Every structure is written in C-alpha cells, then in structure tokens.
Image (cartoon, rainbow, N blue to C red):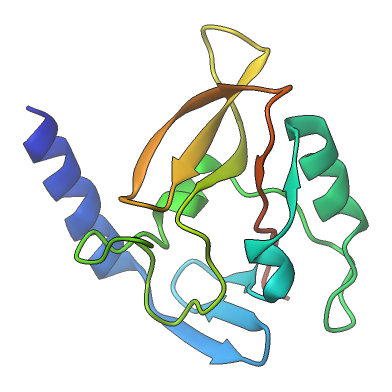
Amino acid sequence: MMKIVILVIMSATILMASFTREGVLVHDTKLKLIWQDDNATKTTRLNYLDAKEYCKNLSLEGKDDWRLPTIQELQSIVDFRRYKPAINEVFKNTTPRLYWSKTLYSGDKNRAWYLFFYDGRSHYYLHSNDSYVRCVRDKD
C-alpha cells in the first residue's frame, strides 16, 4: 500500500511541477509559487514558531510576503528519483534533512508536518525541535 501512495505522489509531483530558476529564487509556473533557494535554506535551523516568524520577516529580492509552506507545497518540489537530497534538480541549496511546513498535525497541535529531503518522506515533529526552513510566496 505504501508503495502505491509514494508512486501516486511521485506521479502527481512530476506532472504538476514546472520550475525555472532566477538567481536565488525558484519559480513554480504550474502552482504559481516562488521558492527561496539561497544559502540560508541550507543553514537556517529553527523551532516551528521561530521558523514561521523567520518567513514572515524575510525580505528577499525586494519581496517581503514570504511564508512557511504547507506540507503539500513542500511535497510538490520532491523528486523521488533523487535522494540526498530528494528535490527537483533546479534547487541548489538543500540539506538532506528535515524542513518545516506550516501544516499542523491534527492529532496534536504541538506538532507540525515536516519534509525529510533525504528521501522525500514526510512526518510530524514537536514544535520545540529545530528543523531547516525554506520559505515560499505566491506569485504576483
């Protein structure tokens, strides 16, 4: 059953995503998102609340409307054909570790979903733990 779920997610990701790179930004032209992909995305580790605040306060390439992505948005940049990191090759700054999403775990509001870019899996984590941060914004 797990293999089927992964295959469906992988297929949907490949069909949905279309990425272009401009400097330290990655544009997803299908989902109309712009991703942060500067050096900070592989060095910034924060707890959940600080990660949300970091994105809210981020100013990058003249834009200041950044936010922490949902787990579905993070899953859209996974490439299951790759590992260490399992992310679309247009992204240049990724540590194969855990990255926060803003999606709360419904079974415990003190946990939020993360994406593990080592192999593309997702799970949930206590807010007090540190994870990496990659911010996103909606395309104008």
